[in-house]
Image 1 (cartoon, rainbow, N blue to C red):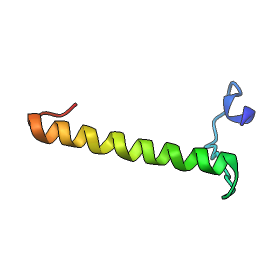
Image 2: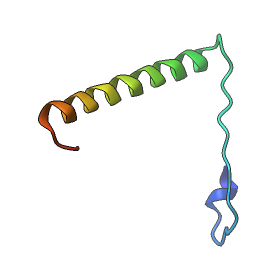
Image 3: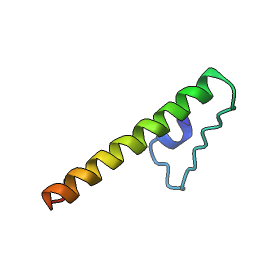
Image 4: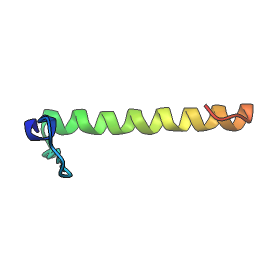
Length: 54
């Protein structure tokens, strides 16, 4: 990941986050996905209710 922060880096860099299931990191990742989905639904509901984009 340090390579993508180097000055003068002109090439596209792809970063992968590998998470194993049944680990603490895996459970935290699933919680983050759940929270992200929940926040997205709330924002869509507010936008639909108010008729405006946030």
